[in-house]
Image (cartoon, rainbow, N blue to C red):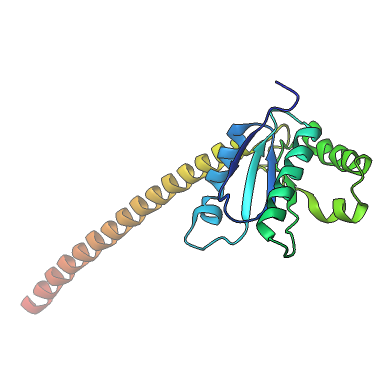
Length: 193
């Protein structure tokens, strides 16, 4: 757990980076990408790159250092044009430490000389939220597992509904056939009278 250790994934290093998404661990980066794969890997062409970073904990210095590297890379790509300044979205764990991280990170940036306007515009939280109301220590890997579990339950319920509907249709068809037989018998009895 080195002070400056970090995992990162860049979707396209040939275009400017418009956003850094930061997480506590690499598994959370992969889980986030699994949850939102259509947004990042869908058919729509992406004009601005997103970098995904895992800090191996909650490390302000690592994020700010990586931000500076990305900003410098964006300056080089701009070739004298307006430089894209990436936003920093915090996708850390939705627990007390994770929620406090963004506030502490903003203070850290202010101490490093970043303006309040820059900080308020460019630093935001994107915490994972449980669909089932789980509130303690929830991360994007938990959200991926929960989402997959809910999809499984949803598919299972759809199969059960299909089976019930088939049984209901079958029962109605059987009932119609029985009524037809009874009606035919009644007609035969009435005709013979």
